[in-house]
Picture 1: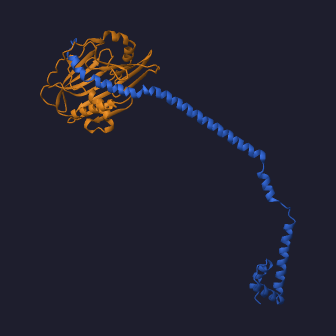
Picture 2: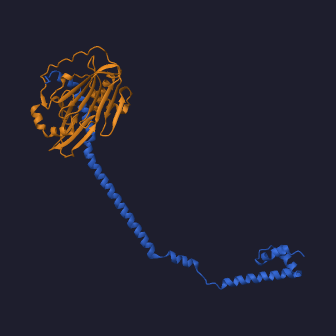
Length: 239
Length: 145
């Protein structure tokens, strides 16, 4: 019940923040189907979809933040998109171990106007297009957080979130600055079949290992997710 | 003499279907009309001949014959027994199908509990957690170029 209330509040907040902006989303809801919608024309039944899509939207992009050990970036300039001068960034994984991102960024302020995410098979899993004209003023620089710098734990990924859910499931989130994934780890006596799914623009991998159930969610191919699960103990040591 | 109307009455008279008035008129007419009298006589003879022909026919007891055919004990019992057996088999097959379906659904439910419902929750949890903190953390890291 509390989760529903929290989700409702988050939905309201997200909806309010984007109330004045029209953003077009296309999201792979499963292996075969897509859902496409404008944020201001979405029906009540798709509110969860809207929440997910707006949270997955990347408002800004700074190519210097990318780890060039794992990504190759191709810039294209001189492109106009909806009368806006944009730079197109084609960010491809060097080792084919994470998803490709294609971004169109407003040259003036670094705002992402359009983004497409493709899996390693070339299937589109998520896309959005911002249809509103943005301010010409440069964006304020993001404040640095006075924390211990994050350390790379796994192939360019950093731990950004680690908590235990109410049902005892451990949830850890990682990001490399562009692609993200989460590992959910739960004690589960029944051995379930290994499962690979596409759900709401994310790959979902589930596997029983011993008496634990691992679920990995994110923009990684299934082979990488399986490798992760198998080496999870190393990941914990390096955290 | 016009005997047309009397000719019609003759067959009715033989079948005893005339009224008393018609009978009296016809009898009075036949006292004086030889032709109608002969016609009457022929009609009566014809009726007798038909009656005799039926009396020589074999007496068929239709009701007994029908009842005998109905009461064929062996054939009727076999049919109803087969019907009962086939109904029992159909019922047993239906029970088996329902049981298998129930068992399969239980098996599927097991997976669904930790399956699709949980998966959706995990996606929501992942997306919700990976959004905001990402920007701040990466800002503070030295990335190789």
